[in-house]
Image (cartoon, rainbow, N blue to C red):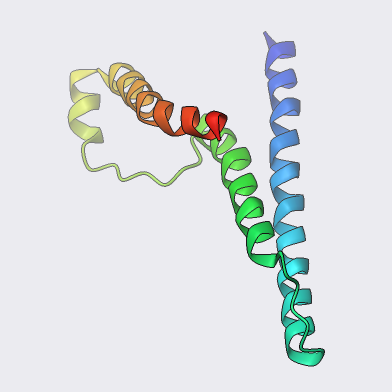
Length: 113
């Protein structure tokens, strides 16, 4: 079991590294575009499209890892009643299934496009 945990931890580093590199590339692209636009009056033509692709890459590579680590922002307003009734696992399972169902259509559209 420990080998599986180490393997998943190592595999989760890949999308996070990819997101970090994409963020760095976006910073360099934005800086270069501003300098080129301001100093040389020659903006980078495809900057808008590259920024959109980079943001999508960051979101869709980092979000699954953060969700698996439960690193997302959460409001715990109803945690006490669920703990009192002992149904935290049921709640978490239903929320995970609902999120997966809600993302099924957008994921299908991305695959089609």
